[in-house]
Amino acid sequence: MGIENLAELSFNPFHMARIIMYFLSAAGGAASFPRVYLVLPMVLYDPSRSVLMRANARSSLYSLFLDDQSKREHLAGLQRRYMEYKPLTNESLVVGASREWLKVDSTIAVSQLVRYQDITEPNLRGLYKAAHYLGVILHKEPHDARVFMSLGVYPV
Image (cartoon, rainbow, N blue to C red):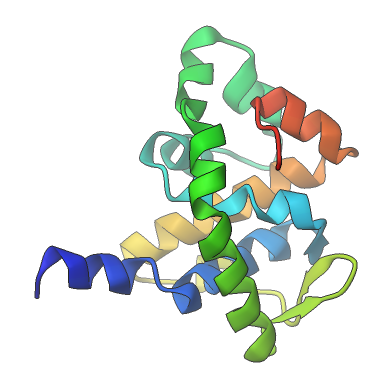
């Protein structure tokens, strides 16, 4: 199997929709559209994923990424990745909604809560755990504008 085939398998919208499900489950079951577009750029990028995998329920956006210059480096290129992953996020939302995994309205909600703790395959568990803790920390933030300004992302 060639590298192109692996990329197609890795970045397919069915798998990405599942990552979004773990994010939403930890974010109280639903989130605004803008926040969902942060999931793939943060979870699929190894430096930010590794930070999220070490998070806990008391973690915050500030404590994980913003209170120290070296932590901010884990967000490098987030604006570019945000734009690059937008089409894949759109496809994933369509797949999730068509499979009835996601409910799309004025917000995006998960149809059934999922737990990363139930996953035994280590690579998937790591992705889902990172998505879970991103959901936990973004759920604590009351305003989308504050989240995006803190992360240095300007949605277009």
